[in-house]
Image (cartoon, rainbow, N blue to C red; front, side):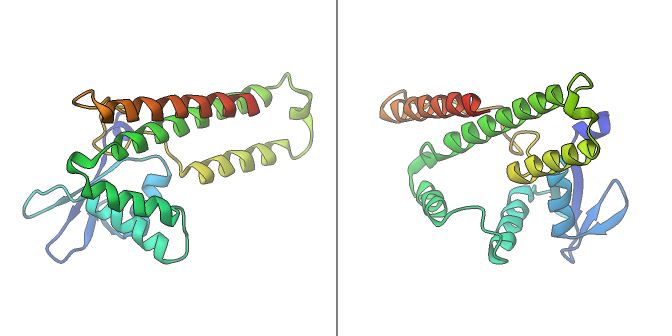
Length: 191
């Protein structure tokens, strides 16, 4: 289990080939995307320089999926991301995204807990033929809808933080947090 807690180390050779240090074989970007979908954190390091290339490769994976028509990010979100790079210090976008994904992950965990409770042996539906297959389909659907998020972003410190200066930016962040909390309440009432 301790093996799953530390990131999977992928080394990039000068030839740009990616090497999985755990299985001692070469991997592709699609393999790395699969590791992440399965809940595994990855760290990609340049063998020669020791530079951490994780962000670069994660962005490349997203770009490749988007270019194949697997559009997850609406154009408006992409525009907002580009704008956030133009704001000194990145604005509130990184904290907002972190808070959003934290809320999504919490909602996913709560939904899985409720499904598990609903699927217990005491539930008469659990005795129906094919119920286990339905349960597996539900879990696969949830994993697909949430992208398999099981941890924070690589390099994250565990959640959104307030603004540095406590001024207008801090008020915006507080407003966003309030809106997220209201959405969370609405989601919990729906389920």
